[in-house]
Structures are given as C-alpha cells and as structure tokens.
Length: 462
Image (cartoon, rainbow, N blue to C red; front, side):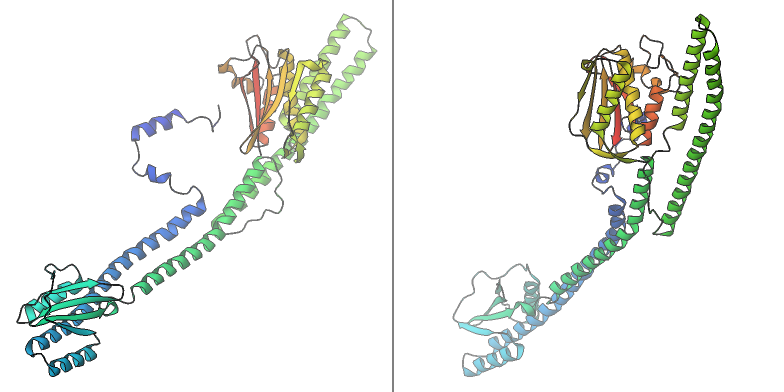
C-alpha cells in the first residue's frame, strides 16, 4: 500500500471528530503554490487596508464637499428667489436678475404666469435637502420647487409670486470634481503595488523551486550539474544542507560499493579454488553434488551483491522504454528457452526517459523471470498516465493472496503457498526490483492480473 493511495485511519478519525472546518471551503479556493500564497499574504492586507481607508475617506470627503457646494448654490438660488419676490415685473427686476446670474455664474430665466407642477416634497438628493432648508427656513415666504438631473446640469425650478424661476445649475457646482481622479490614483497605486510584489516574490520563490527540482532529480537518481545555493539566507542554508546530505549519501554508497567489491573478490577466490579441486577429483555422485553446491553458492553470492549494490554506480542516460522492455523479454526467453508464443509483448512507440538503463533492465528481467517461472503465458505492456508510465508484467500463474503481496517484497521472505516467487533463489528478486524502481523515484506493486494470475506493476515518473 502506497502513501499516495491511502490515508491513515488516525487522520480519518481526527477529521471526522473535528467536523467541517469553517474555512475549509475557502481553503480549496486558495492557490496551492508558495508564490501565490506569499503574494496573497503580502498584497491582500495592504489592499484591504487601502480599500477601507479609501471608502471611509472618500465617503467623508464626498459628503463634506458635496454638502458645502450645494449649500453655496442653495444660498445663491435663495437670494435670487428673494429678489424676485420683492420686485414687481419690469426692467429693473430683469436687470437685477441678470446681474445676480452673472455674479453667481448661474443661467437664470423667468417664466411669468406659470404654475409649478409636481413640486419636491421629500428631499432625495443633497441639493434638494439644502434647497428645502433654505427656502423653508431662511426665506419668509414658503416656496415650492422641483429639480431634474440631466447629463451636464440640474434643472431647478422655484415657484415665485408671479411665475416660475428656472435655474440651470452645472453639475460641477454641486459635485466633487476630483472623485474620478481619486479612484484612478487608488487603482494605479494598487497595480504598482501588485507589480512590485510579483517581481519581488518571484525572485524569492525561484530558489525554493530550484531546490525542490534538485531534490526531486536526486531522488530519481539523476545528476545535479551546476546546482549552487542562492536566494535568501534561509534558502541558502537549506540548499547547503541538501548538498551536504547528498554528499554523505554518495559517499556512503561509494563506500558500500567498494566494500562489496572486496567482499566479492574475497568470496570468489575460495570458490574458484574449490572448483579447481573438484575438477581434479574423479567423477562420481558426490562430485556432482559438490559441484551443484558450489554453483548455488556462487548464484547466492551474486544475488546478495546485486541486492546490496543496488546498481548505484550507474549514471542515468536517455533510454527508449519500449526497446528496453523488448530486449529484456528476449533475453529472458532465450535464458529459459521458452517458445515465442509464451510471451506476448504489447508495446507501442515508447517514451524516452532519463533512467539507469542496466538497473531498470534488471528490474524488468526479475519480474519477467518470475512470470515465466510460474505461468504458462506472460504479457508485457506499458501504460501512459499523467507524469508517470506504468510497466505491467502479467502472468496466468497461481498468483499471490492480497494479504501476502506486500510481504513478498521483504528481503529473504519466502511464501508458504504453492506459488513462491523466489523458489530456486534466496528471496531477493522482488526486493531488488523495488529497490531499483524506488531509486528512480517510482515503485513496484503487485495486483491481480487480467490473465488470472499476478500482475507486477512498475511505476516510473516521467
């Protein structure tokens, strides 16, 4: 069972006990990458604070300025209404009206004998409220009025003694003219802030991404040419720690390989002497038994060394997977002298991956040999999936019980059932295969085959 296939029971119990977190729904909407989350952490508080300040300031500024402007216009209209009510119709009244209109900068006209229709009774705008206050409270005579808003002006009509006074108030006289400029500067400053944050965070996150790629490549057994720490102090420390860890692992692997090379030489020397001595002895039943024992000892030593060595000294190189699988299958058929119809190879044009060719070939050969050993028919194929490929080796043998499949990968483990994957060996075939696959960043697992037996699946990341 793999980490990407299961969730621990303790986590399930803990999640069910705690229930649905109130922010869990929002969590799914947030970016998963460090860059996106860092950008939100930096930009979101500033934008929220800026928005709150803007709303409070703008609302207060707009209301104060608008109230001041409309109060001034209402005072001017009230003064003109007072002049109209205190003068009789004639040239002198017209002259005073023109002088007032010129001084206040308001287009004013008089409509004699007209009754005002639909006067304002409830104030809906700031100008209406100010006019109601001026006309009702500061002018002795009660006057009704109406206002109509157009694109460029406000049409104010006030009922006077002998007609209607019409005043066209420019909208700039009663509204804050810098509202659009204020919004523009707010948006502009926010865009500049986001641009600076993106450039800065991009440079800060890039070293972390590079370190993650280096760790991933190292886990897949690939070389890391030209990797050097850079970025923030904490990132440099992590990169230096990674380099030291890689050096320690490489040194450990090299020391183990050197030691095993010496052990191999020391063990083969007495075995060679035994072979020479057996060659000089007369041929009999005991001679044949001893010869078989020596051959078995050599085979066991080779398997021990292959398992411990793990093909660690090989460098990755571009390899066509389909060609590798076909060569491995042909070698196994020749070694076991099985007919061609026993093995069916369903391969298309395979991808070319950076892998340790000989190590991966040995992994596939181990799985094919197991399939040929316990099945009468074997099928080899690979399946493309997002970011990984799967190599399937199926057989029609007796298979392995689901509860014993994971245990079959343990070194020196032997199954008690009819099918024993390591019969004739020492119990390291599957262990070596999984060790090689994991050295490439992948894994090997067992499943039920479509042929009725066992299916060994090798996963290799692309």
